Each structure stands twice: as structure tokens, then as C-alpha cells.
Image 1 (tube, one colour):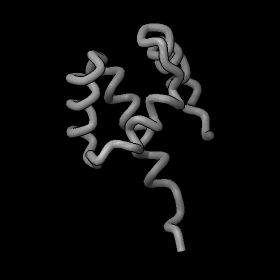
Image 2: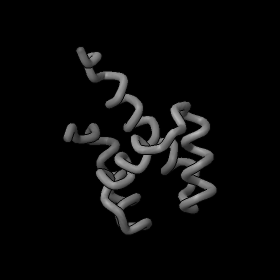
Image 3: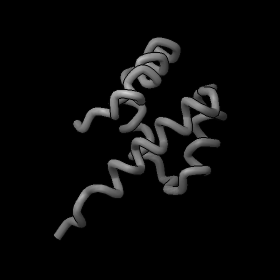
Image 4: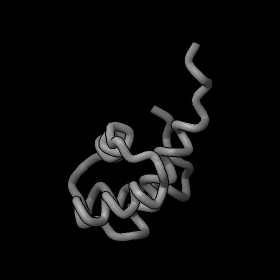
Length: 74
């Protein structure tokens, strides 16, 4: 799994500490959602898991950037 940039690493460490799940679980949860748009995913995480706006934005942005960086299958 690609690691977040150094400046994001501190932010992600605080997410893991505060919410008790590793980043890999959050990214898998986001990827497995039927939602695909950034704002929808942010709102969903905030409402379903009680995560703050900054943390959800970081998680969703990171996950979607990884998804968009992958070459198309085929």
C-alpha cells in the first residue's frame, strides 16, 4: 500500500489514535462504499462514524487520489 506523504503521516497518525482504526481500514471502508463523490463520502463518514471534517477530508482525498492514480484495468 502506498504511504501518505510525510506531512500527511502525522495527520493520519492522529486519526488512528483518535478513532482506533488503522488507515488501511478506513481506506478499505471508503473503497467498499457505493458512494463515489468526495463530498458524499465525507458526509457519510462524518455521520456514520463521527469523524471530524478535517480527518474525513484527509481520508477521502487520500483514498480517491490512490484510486485515480491506478491505471485502468484491461
